[in-house]
Image: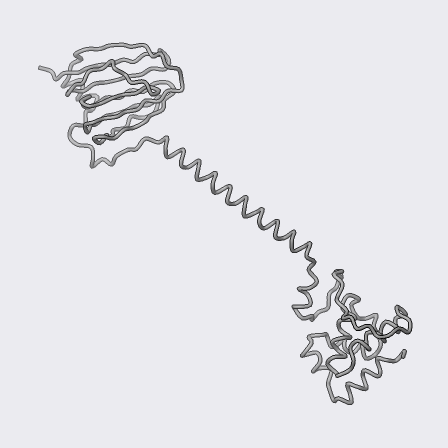
Amino acid sequence: MSEFYKELKLIRQDQEIDLEEIHNRTKINLNYLQAIEDGKFDLLPNTYMRLFIRAYATEIGANPDEAISNLEIYLGQKTDKPARKKKESSPPKETNQPPEEVDESVQAHSRSPKIVRSDMVKGITLVGILLFAIYIIRVINAEESAKAPLEYPHEFLDKKSISEQALQNNFDVLAESVQMIEEESPYTLKLATAERVWYRSTIDTLASNENVLPSGDNRLYEFSQSIDILFEHTIGLNLYLNGIKLNSFDSSSNPVRISLSAVDKTVTIQHFIPKS
């Protein structure tokens, strides 16, 4: 019984099967196959020892269960008991030096379900973080776009555009009024018009911008210090400060300047007429 491996070798030789053929079919290293036939089981990886001997016995036509039983007796791990019918499975224990050539399916079984579940949880977590980051970025971009006033291309600005120099040269101030602001900061000014109107706005310390408000449209501006708007006209125009309508200016076909100061808490309105 102690030389059972020699009997296996004789069976292989009787079957005229070369070790090279077994290597090609099982992908077991030739050195390991030779170690099996020499009885040098200490040269085999402990994790794959029984798996290799079972595959070797199957390839040469021997009884793999009997070969495993004889191996157990040889190693002193089993007394004279009937050969086990239960198929041996490779333990999930990892070795520092795995065999050089092992079938990929054997290596795949060495991954424990716990490791697979851990990898899946990590992957799902990373995907969730990525989707959340994309959502936050889109929300921030949407808020920035909503705050930015819509500016029309220059081709929409017609000849009714009025510069400061043209305003001084061609118009006189007809009337000026000052009204106190009762609302508290933060301040928002909404423009709504029934007629298409050109206007130029200056918010806080920013540079002035020219825009055209189409008929039936509206705009919303936020400011912290001041806002100054020169309108081409105020026909069909309504202004709302923090949702409260400003009624302190008249409808006019001539330019009107409206200045709101958060520092002084005042609304200054200037009506212009053409110079005679």
